[in-house]
Image 1 (tube, one colour):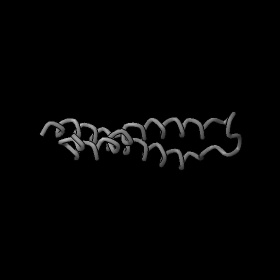
Image 2 (tube, one colour):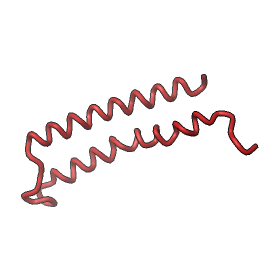
Image 3 (tube, one colour):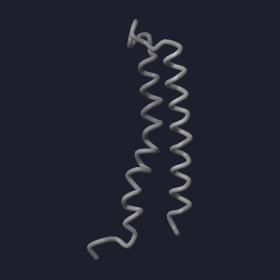
Length: 76
């Protein structure tokens, strides 16, 4: 068989994997850029940190929603 029966799942799988990995990368990146020993004077300000963490929380919640909807609709 050349093509699988469910091509939609094959197309959506990379999006789900990316959505799961993105929050992990964002949290690690924010921890790195806020490390005073590593970044010195170039660490983020409080305002930028608030915006960055709020964006990260929003992306985490959207990633969870995408993951849950992908799992629940996979068998349909």
